[in-house]
Length: 133
Image (cartoon, rainbow, N blue to C red; front, side, top):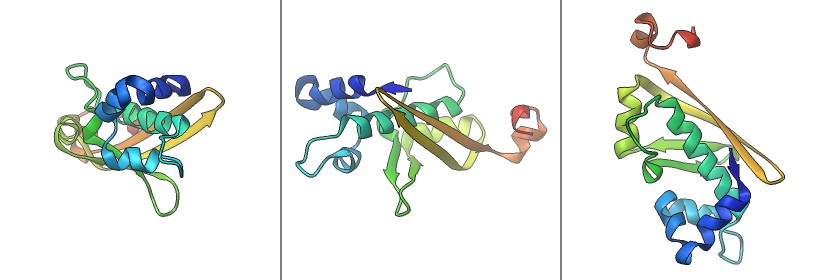
């Protein structure tokens, strides 16, 4: 869950320095309104998605690799996630395989996202993801 006001702080910070540490150039462009300024609610959604995806890695050994969890709107309008670099390694280390599905919703000052990942079958057999059985 991300406060829209917190996303606005990312946008306003030192000409968007925080924003560029959390979102890729493509994500910033996709978050921008017609006049070219990022929309705080859309930015909050992308941040919430990245945080939810990171939590599927079930690690306490790393900080959120913001730029390596990439999200974009699909042709159908729902969010899609791509993992690269550090995020891809963390997901692999956690036994995640395949697609990560996400859902994002906003209500007033808050945006919330939920991510669901698929574990490798062997992880389930070994008891590493019994809550998914």
